[in-house]
Image (cartoon, rainbow over all chains, first blue to last red; front, side):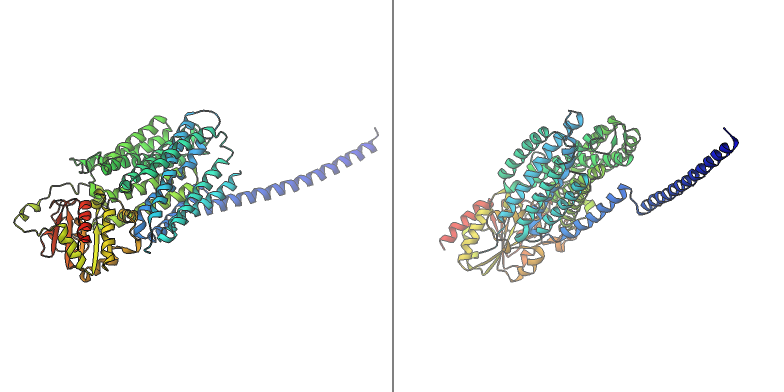
Length: 142
Length: 464
């Protein structure tokens, strides 16, 4: 190999290296930008409280207020049906029971889930039916 | 179904539950409200069954069939007079279900999405222990309330020395156990929390007397809601949290209304010991004269009246007199007498109990008025007919500062022309207070069983 070809090859390699370096720089720049964005997302989410507890607690507090205003508007004559129906809807705890009883393999957890499904079902059926029975008796004078 | 679709379904279910409560603002919309409640529950159940975690349906179907059958049969057969104990029994089931769901979550955290075995999220552990504690307290508390209402247990308050101190100590021990549980994540401590909470549930209800059961039932209603909300936090499920909060605030408001109806603070009721003492001041009333009448006299007086207000109490429910009472009123109405009913907030054994019993006897709800609506009308009324009520008509609540029921709002029956008071004997009411109404000149006592008295008055009216 003559020195001229060598020098030519070396120059080509150097060019290639320079191009690659340039590309890498671009990649690095993009990576830096992404990292920056990610930090920003984390920071904003921390600031707005995306911790599930904070979100759930917000829901809870608002629901207490909704409950407060809705229940004060219930006529005293219907306070018994109110208790029966709130009893029925508090059995929505069946949602947790269904998930627990859902897996195909038997486990202690599935057993507890089953028991909770039975108890909650008594309440759901019993609560809504007895409410309906009570309400169907309330009639206006002819 | 993806979890975001089910989350959407849960919001719809929550709205249905809010509409169910909203519907109860009037008897006209109430039935539709109940249908909203049923729809909400159906949506919640279907959305949950469609989740990928729920793979086997056999167990679930068996569970729903067993529970659904029991619930349906009980709800169809129950006598309306037994409503308070039914509601108490139902509350106990919500409490126990909360305990079981928490136990299921503890033994299979992966299934319920709160971490892995031995590495459950700390927040979930705290929420789980709170949920399970409230659930267990609701369970035993409701069982005791059920026993007292059903008459299996004595309605007398059980009080002993150092009671409040014991409860306080147990409460502190419970807190320490929660801390231990969160740090150790041990199943042993989990069940210790359950057992201790079960004991606390019993201890906080036994000192509360039979007459305060309306407050207790409302309070347990509230607890069952908070238990559901606690489990909702554990499972990070907004539907459970929203529903629990609705039920919790509903029970709290009812407790408040009941306490106000007795002019007692919530803590005074909770600390208990009221309503069991033997009637102290009742004995020196012996020399006072009581005017006694028979069914014929009552029939004559009422047939001559223009307006009558009926004041029912729990005694009417015990004697199952509501149907006979309504027949008697029908007789009077055909003679052109105006008849209305006055309901005291704490009449009966649960909020609104009297309204349901009168509705059951086909009394139109627009003839049934609340204390605030009707109390001014007694002065313009010829006859007040008190049946099965006592303390809620006692005028000494307005005048006698020494009376245990001083300050309690009462129906001003003594302002009417004549008071007809149906009662078995001169015994005092649940508060253990003698009723000065018995000895007034315009009062006529009608001694006997409430149902029989109404039947006799009906017969006498037919002959006039």
